[in-house]
Image 1 (tube, rainbow, N blue to C red):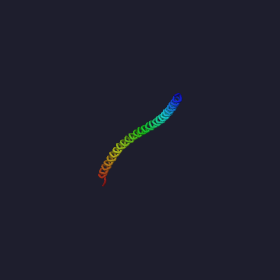
Image 2: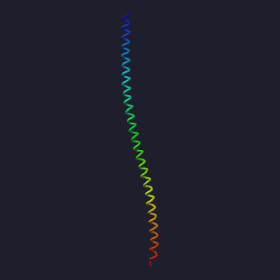
Image 3: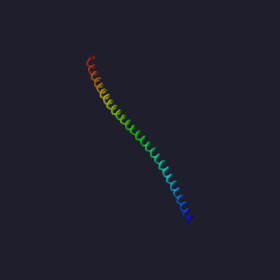
Image 4: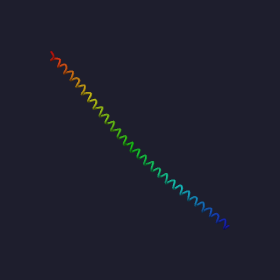
Length: 98
């Protein structure tokens, strides 16, 4: 009976040791997963930052294009006014020709 009890305790001790090793493996795996998750979070943050910068740059480009469009309309209006003035001057010059 003592021999059986010794075998039982040895079996329990082996099981406890195996269980402890499994817990240590799970803990190590959990730490690896946590480290990977932190890397992914850092990457997502970096991507979000890049997206924000791109959005800001896009807004600057849109504003510049809008400003350029307004400037082109102004240039077009001035060119049309100059053309009208040139025609008017030609008609005035015609009056002085012999």
